[in-house]
Length: 342
Ligand SMILES: Nc1nc2c(ncn2[C@@H]2O[C@H](COP(=O)(O)OP(=O)(O)OP(=O)(O)O)[C@@H](O)[C@H]2O)c(=O)[nH]1
Ligand SMILES: [Mg+2]
Image 1 (cartoon, helix red, strand yellow):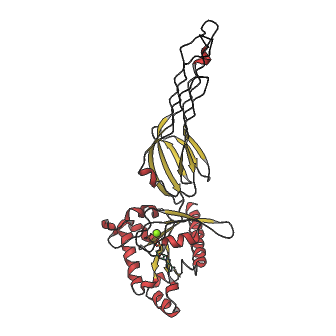
Image 2: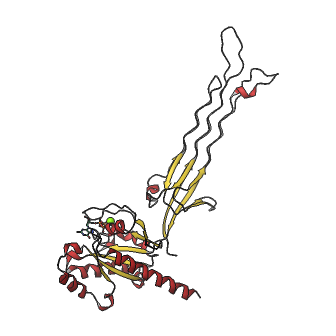
Image 3: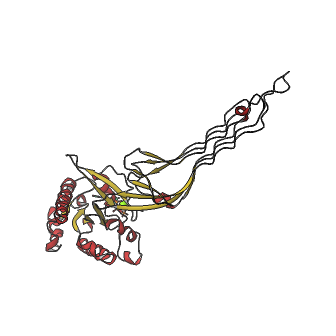
């Protein structure tokens, strides 16, 4: 399977338990009250939850240390200290969680809403009220809280991306993703709106699905570090199909844009050009003359003919045809893979 991998290493520390309290009852006319120290509160857990609104582990590259709240100490009058709050970390669906030290898999969060406790809070210590015995009526002992668990984790996002979108900034990649799937990437009228890859699941009427990855736009010289998109090309190395997105309203420049994109891909990894591909000519709503669209298609090489889909990601025109073309291609690639495996 083609997989989209993204990684992060984080430190998690659950809350310590609060200390048990040493205290004695103080009442009028009773000079020596019994022990009434309450228990400490339990430390909070660190919990991961798979959230469909989260698409990458990008945020975990900025903040690396995460601590849940400690339990509060116990108090007099047998009052228990407050439990520490759990710390909930939202990760993308498809996150595999490993113990960084042992490499052992702690869990695989494959379902939306699925949770995994990665560090358990320490139990609160018992207060001295627990320690009175007939021979020791005024115990001056209480337990300390237990420490919360701590560990380093490796998070690995292993979503399956079947189709990778490749295009200049502003070509409409994120707009197309949002039209084809439930994903809600940021869309704006300026280049480099997308700063991190977005994934969307495309659902067909018959219940079949495939995953599309939208990556930051590429520009000429990307391989020399110009712009943003180059390092993200690794995310489409494992997709089965590339979908080139071109802005047809740039008219004659469209073919040149396509050549530049292909060249940048080639410089990154020549094998990218061996992948199956389709070409979407986006923004046809800005081209009212169908004759003009036909003329532009004719500017492409012979081998690209038949792979070109004029669409409007904004109005939706042509998008359904494109979705089914991608799906049919995927089905035939999967068949071929099976055939080769035999
Ligand atoms: N008229 C028209 N505008 C479109 C169409 N698709 C996208 N746009 C507009 O083009 C601009 C860029 O769209 P995005 O989807 O953010 O483009 P992108 O390719 O993801 O851009 P980067 O993230 O910067 O690489 C936005 O203002 C969109 O509204 C379309 O089919 N027709
Ligand atoms: Mg974008």
